[in-house]
Amino acid sequence: MAEDRLPDEFTLIRRYFAPLATHPGAAALGDDVALIAPAPGLVHVLKTDTIVEGVHYFADDPAALVARKLLRVNLSDLAAKGARPVGYLLAASFAREMRESWLAEFARGLAEDQRTYGISLLGGDTTATPGPTTLTVTAIGEADAARVPRRSAAKPGHDIYVSGTLGDAALGLRVIKGELRGLSNEDADFLAGRYRLPEPRVALGQALIGIAVSAIDVSDGLVADLGHISEESRVRAEVQRDALPLSRAARAALATDPGLWPDIVAAGDDYEILFTAPSAAAEGIAGITRIGRIVAGQGVAILDPAGKPVEVKTAGYRHF
Image (cartoon, rainbow, N blue to C red; front, side, top):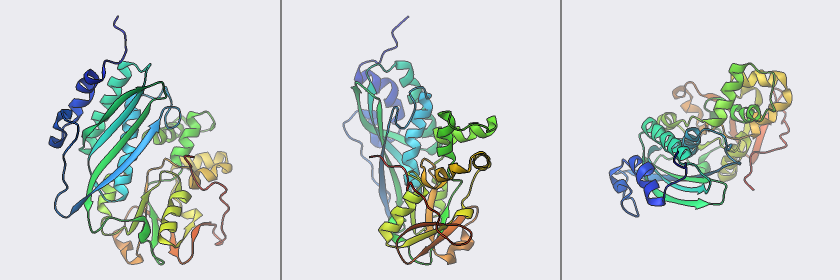
């Protein structure tokens, strides 16, 4: 039986990554750089994120899911800016004990999501490390140069919206770690799936061009990410707690333990689009939850039905 060890660097690239470099500008990874240009009137939108074994994913997570999550957390940022994904750069530092079979599954996961989102590998770098495995993607998209929603554009009078549901990924992490019990298998699997494989709202982001004025994806938690908009725009964000969109599974978890509420507003990994828009735009926004309003002032407040602020001890996920 052949040893399941990684091949040398150039064989590794030729075998697993060159087939993913389908964009003409990538030159099948035969050069040191990729050459791409945006269409007239568009700008490139760039985003880099890193995931580390033992920090952002578990060592026994399926390699294909790790690859897809790595791509999707980056695509989520592009989605919040209304960008169409074009491709990505991959910098991979694989632990020396990495098995080739793991890498083959990792490349398969990249290929699957490349087909899903119509993107190509454009280049990058591979190296070995004593560990842990560290994986970085720089995603590249194109967006209308004049209509990219920025964190700094929220104004008093804007409504605050968020796509999808909140808190599922944080609760899913608790399920995976064995900290959340008493749920049905269906609800537990749903929450765990939301943590392991986010759904970047790429199509929605493009549909919101011209509607969303400021926007961000919910990666570090609702309070933290809305706080970035508040700080950059120099405004106050007021959110109605009872308006927050929750999945059936999240409601079941809260019914079991109301103390999980901070996970809904302060934990990350939801990868939903959080945006503000003028009240006049409401008629053009369907299927997305309005959760609050931008007013004069500073900071973020979560309000109960009586309009009183709810204490949130943890603002969100912090990397340091």
